[in-house]
Length: 229
Image 1: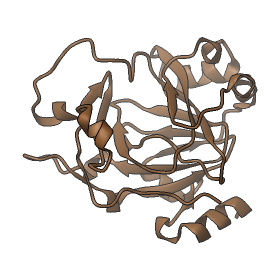
Image 2 (image 1 turned 60 degrees about the horizontal axis):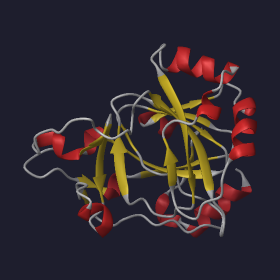
Image 3 (image 1 turned 45 degrees about the vertical axis):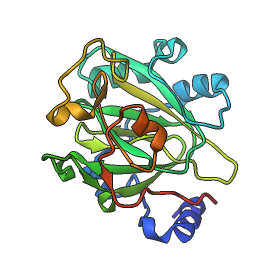
Image 4 (image 1 turned 45 degrees about the horizontal axis):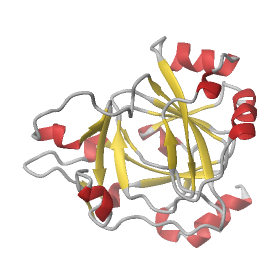
């Protein structure tokens, strides 16, 4: 067991933290080991800005440059669908919300990260839409890991693992995902969660700014806050 995972487990006993290589992750996605991300990681690390908050950019031209890894992911994981490559980076220690897409997402971890994930099947769709945060699972993804988050995966920004540190992941998604909706929908049913193109989101009611921005406060139970090491 990597020393960093052991120390994170000791600091966060309630998380039941597992590595993404554990079979339990298969409920939420796949740990992809056949692809070598070293070329795209080197490109990204040379350009990566520093941020003290969570930054997400859906499409970054330099990250979408042709490479063997990009071609393999676009052809094999996304089946030839138009695909964007962006990144998510910064500092983050709380879950805050959970989103899902109706297509897979691939993450390449530029740093160690903790992924807090759930399953769409566990959302209670009714007059009120809710998801119990006790259902959340936590996984440790080391730098260099390539993971596919399945369409039924609930997730949000990764968590950084070291005190004063940060996280960074490359994010592969069908083109247009997470861009602003170019239309409006009736505020009924699942539409209440639709926050952007191909993005359905539930946030924790403690996140007052997000709720005031119109995002749906559907998480019930405690928010999850991680202790770095």
